[in-house]
Image (cartoon, rainbow, N blue to C red):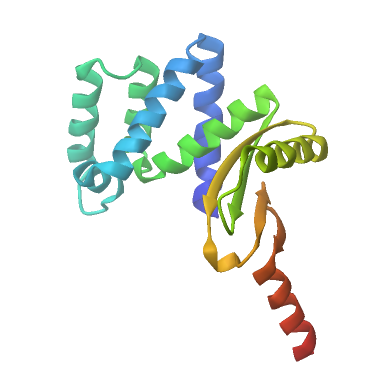
Length: 179
């Protein structure tokens, strides 16, 4: 939790600077690519997350990224700050928090939905319309399939869970009987 608070502060600073500099789209694109790299490249993940590597070693790698010209100068400077402050490991959380800022500015909300079985476009459209009405924001669905739900779905809007799955109802019934 503490790391998310710290990451949120870094993300705030980066987002505000990118916004005032008019490079928000470039910064977001670079951050997403770096985040993908953390997830897909074992060596880069070690660089970001390893406490065994010295700050000087990490700075050398970050400088190589900056000199490559493949990232915006603001992103490069930001990576240097994270590295010097021994916070490079917060990069994924910073990316998440920056994306939250963007969604907030655009009046969007990301909703995670787990279905028991794949759904058709009509169900997806109806669900999106209902969630738009509830949240008063444009809904961005992030969908997954979870057969363990047995039927129905679980919906996460921010930190709120709407469990309308068969498994959820059975679990609730089991807890009621146990009382």
